[in-house]
Length: 99
Image (tube, rainbow, N blue to C red; front, side, top):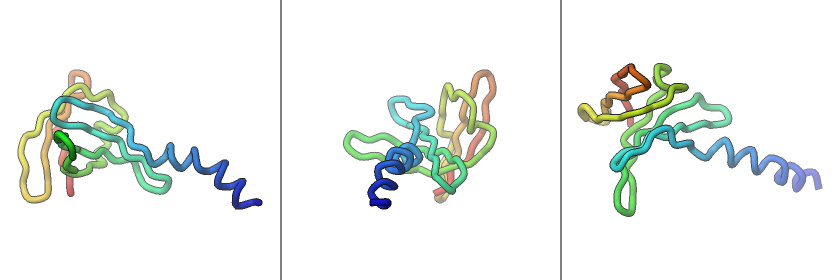
């Protein structure tokens, strides 16, 4: 009985902690905030497709974690790293997203 009670109480909390929040989205790219129960907050850069999507990398850069993201531009891709300029208000930050 205790196990069933734990599952009923803990399930909504676990789902809330594992569902990514979209911080920015345009026609081609999306930035998602990934939150884990024991992991630090990270941003995932995803390239949208017609049916599928491609994960370009993650970043835990503190400059943009809690800011309102207004624009995203991919600058370059080198190896497994994608560099993007992320605008937050009137500031621009070059952020590296690592695979």
